[in-house]
Length: 72
Image (cartoon, rainbow, N blue to C red; front, side):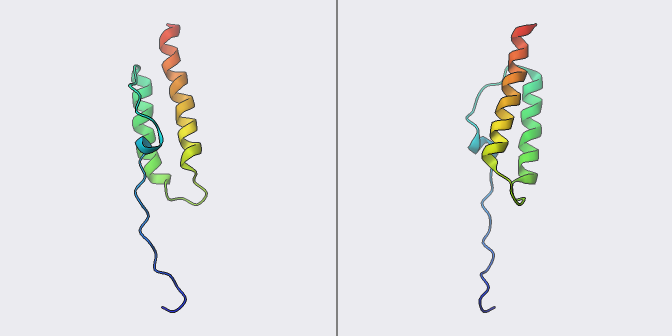
């Protein structure tokens, strides 16, 4: 009532908004990205969640998965 602010709806975040679209060549990287899309949505509104840190971690793992394609 008085002195309380009404909760504002939080905007929907999408991992695609944080990461640039990159065509993934390996199946492992594509599956990992699908997992991260769902995981990102479930943690996006958690306290202390930083979408940029999450995106950096996803990029690191995807780069590593994509690099394994060239090692075969």
